[in-house]
Length: 436
Image (cartoon, rainbow, N blue to C red; front, side, top):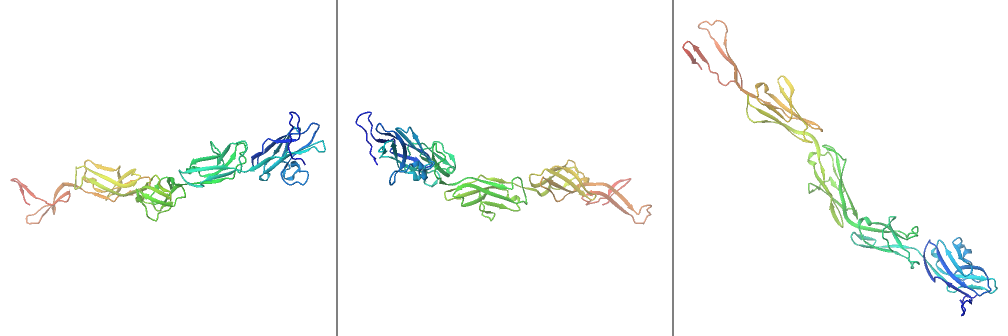
């Protein structure tokens, strides 16, 4: 079998020969490749068969690649079948790597020829690499899309992160690592995006960020209910320690253990500004503070009088209702209690007496009310002082008084405080005399 290539010395007079367009071809696994050659033979010969075969020991006539089981359905011959031939090999496999030769046969018994040099095909797969695979935020990362040979045709490359293409991709990419760039990376050759490399993972480590506190249940917090505060933070590695603060003071109670801070049977004393600190080996971050405003019904309700001291008929006084409540008291109601019963006598925080009289005496209390509940004060006694009045004298026994009998004169008077001293007077024709 002849395997040499011969050319005539005179132009236009050709002998046996094959010239391969590309001696070395590097192609991507899964794609198609064309291997082309031109061939010459002496005049008087007619081409009866052309085919390609792969290197190896063939013990006689080499097998037509198109009839080889391994290549069945993946081979197509193109060309004019006179002086040019192209082998199209589809769905390339790694095992397709090797040297391929062109063979032609003419109508003459000795008219058989093989192109000796052949075309060397190397089939490569894409391999994505990330260096380093785990990196601290802010440091440099290199992505490399490598092949075992240099792909023919200088193709363009594209990178994907979590399946989404990256802009301005090249075969090798460098960038500064940030937390949002963690993910799964793969590369592909443009036009063959359906044949990407296996994915590699980039892990970016960073200190806590976006730290925040949520309150559950949300909405108004009423005294006696239960509340849970939860600290959330984005960190890699995950947060290793949570610390809770109330009004800038670290909370060391059993309530705040880890990510959650729970308060059962909450009281007004638990109101304040709460925040958490999230910490891992790279650093720490504080959340913004959240306000816990515990609402409760009025309490410690009391009545005060102004001015203090004795209350004299005709003076002016003001009774004031005070109460601790959240939200503030929305309505005050006044009540008066005396010997005849209890009745509502006013509303508003203050009860004013511009010209107080003895009939205003009694026990007063107020009721404070907000949307959570209500509470009544203890009573305050208003005792109006006034000078004696309705003063009168009576004689006992009544009727005629006989000389030598006994008679008692009694002085009666309405006063507050009670009359402390009585003085008697006798009046006759000569005038008025004090008799004690």
